[in-house]
Length: 186
Ligand SMILES: [Fe+2]
Image (cartoon, rainbow, N blue to C red; front, top):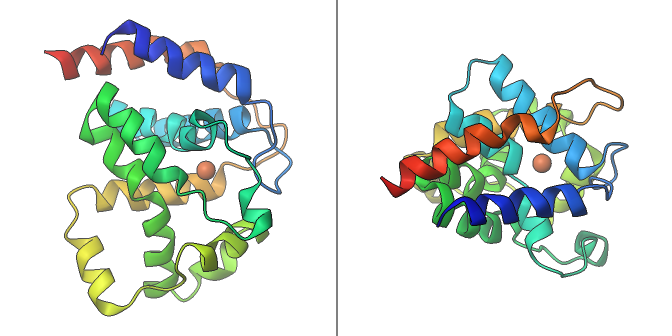
């Protein structure tokens, strides 16, 4: 995987990111850029910043209907996204993305106040995604190497839905993406 793969991902986000992000008033691209900026502001490393920027790319990599949750279907976007990102950037970027939905279920289970913070569409998709975790699922989640990064990503995801927030532009993250992809190749 080379520059071409990074190019395809960035082009997809640029071209299809204008659609709204769930029920919120920000677009997919605005949500992605806000997520990356928040990850950076929190001192996240490049892998976390890239994971934040691209965590919902799974919504955009397939041509499937983007509003499946409305129809009671879980699109498993975290799996499709992580598969694509893993090939290009490796597990440090892909694992938090793969686990960011599980992290929501985990936080709903272990932090009673967390559920109250969720947006309406996150609550709606939660049931489709399996609801709260059983103890064995919690233990399995905690055993995942990327679970701490996934929890950070989840909280960033929840906060990155602010209409009109000033952010960098997509191109500002291009060099970082190329660097991470090149490290994967090395
Ligand atoms: Fe998101």
